[in-house]
Length: 185
Image (cartoon, rainbow, N blue to C red; front, side, top):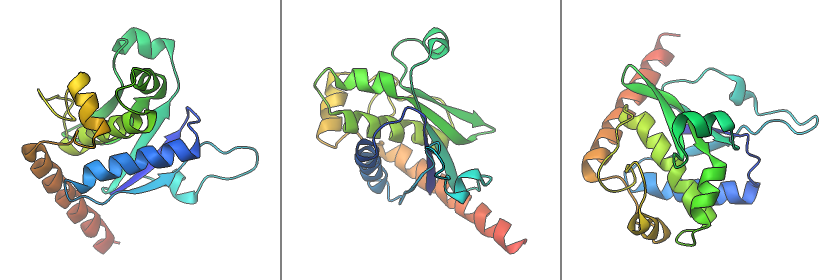
């Protein structure tokens, strides 16, 4: 899978790279390789990579890192770390609210990079699971408790076996769709 990251919160490159590493580890436990593409808004005259403007294919996802927003606070509640857009049992775009992740990390149970990486993996998980539903434990819980944050710090906050199987199946379907679209050209 390829994830195009649109860093509207202007998270530092070092922090984002470390967070992507955390999310990569979560997906490696499922058996999924993730390639991250930096699609940050252009600074000055530096252009975005051309792939950032292309349509998303079946194995492409978009992840937005968003700064604070009064609208988000009003519509999603104060403790929502992000959201994923799911349509017809499949999704391709998710968002993470950086200011909320940063506040979560300020509690000291987990580092900023660990919290961001796990929030990214959680929202991408929604896209690959094809649902906005949450579980009673693990990375797909709606609200992480102290124990979950400790697990994130120990790199043990992961998808449960059933979720991992569903993600592997979905990635297989997406790969087949990508191959079919390439052979039809």
